[in-house]
Image (cartoon, rainbow, N blue to C red; front, side, top):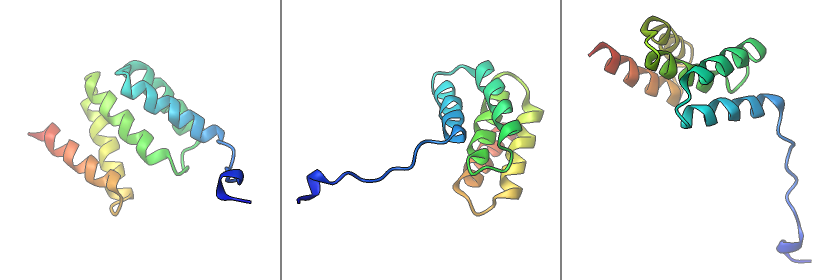
Length: 101
């Protein structure tokens, strides 16, 4: 039997992953108000999940777009302090510097 006839076993997508995909898709479409709503719901349901960091990042970017700079700064600082070794922390630092310039 060759490789083509063998299918990989994939884990089913979780509710957390589906919720994250919804937040990211809305962010990519520029739907800031919906991103904020969905991201807040996500963080209520999955506050310590693996995808909470990028959701906080998307929430911060969209808070800033909607004029809530204080909330955006708070979220970016949470990412920087809570996950300093992550790539998300680097992105958060860069955005925070841009906001302060």
